[in-house]
Image (cartoon, rainbow, N blue to C red; front, side, top):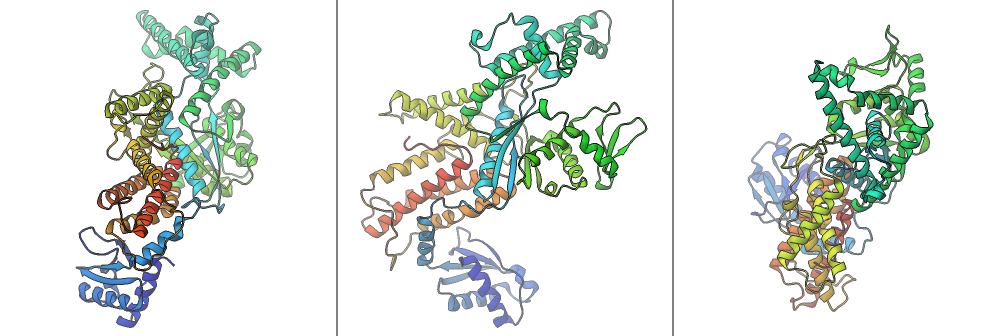
Length: 592
């Protein structure tokens, strides 16, 4: 039984004995730094059940707890707050129950089976900064869900068809002169993205020419010759024209080769892949079935709709009057197909930007109306955009921040700052390169993941690579510092020591409290689909460790028992940092 559960039981018991009445629950909070105590009971909510002076009520309860719980040493009451001092021995015993636990904080019980979708790029351009946030969020949430006791499938749906794909295909066919990514020395996705931008450059010129000839801007956009050619190419692809399909396959393979490198460098992976070219016809049969069951209705023009007005939404089109699907049709079909492919799935997480909030609200409601039990366990991991000091990114104008270039910039920034600080004496060139990359990517990932997913981010590469403050490098540096302490410890510290008569420094006690929060933080992060909870907990843990490090001597302690305990505390903190950062997809260095 943990201390909070024990206290709640005894407070309820004491309330009956002292005041002859019951209370439904007990409210706890951490004791403020300026008061003596380890845990605080809030008295104010109890006044609903026992009228009186909160200080007197708190004093009576505090006295009862000291007399009836061995672990409660003393108490004090400040206004309506009962601050309890807990015996040092309790904290040491508690620490030792976790000290040798393998995979501390991680839960191995498989509660649910969840599919997490993220990335989902288009095959007409390389991944950019927006995709980076998407990938980091999706991957981290998948890892956190696993750590909290779920079985997880990671997936993505690749948007490999449509007019935008045909634009880059047509531009290469007209202006590529048979060049390839290899002949140009470019990554395949960057190569194809170059032709997507080229298409739009030519398209804009043609629009301007048509406007000069007297057409309105709206008409000019429709009648630009290169757009009409792209539309014809799309029709050929849909009709299965061998030459068009061969071109599509060749250019998509170039893109996939490029994506593979980016994913590898970013440190994310997938268990299954879906392609829009395979899924875009899915869902039509479901719509027909839904019509017969009156989940959907048909309008006079033959189009099929779902009425969601009872849910406070509007009517949603699910099939056009000509029988062609819309995105909603496809998403309904793809969700159902995923459960067919993985029959154990009982929930899904969609990592998609907040501009699609309404779409997913509608999708989830429709799937519930269709009667799928797993539809109650669908979650849209909605996130805000990532901005740069220079402004908004636009793919068609070629003003996006390329993911590969961003990762290289982060590595270069880490290199420059590390060299300025002069921290790398004795490193080989290869070790330096690995470390720069680890620091740079750690900075990028932490900067993005420490922010609540729903919030928009203004990303500043230089401030993210700071060795002070709430940053990835600061936490990595603390981990490396602990590794240095452990290397210097010339004695065994892997077994509990005899704690009889051992008293703890305040900083040791605070550190143990922080360590004990880790399992609950993982569960909270999973419940809220929020890597930010893991990131900020880790920062708090590191701050607590650094305060401990600055206030007590570790290896310089003359009492062997105390020295061993302090090394053990440092060791456990390092273990948690490594574990927590792995949930964020961040590596930690053994030295810096």
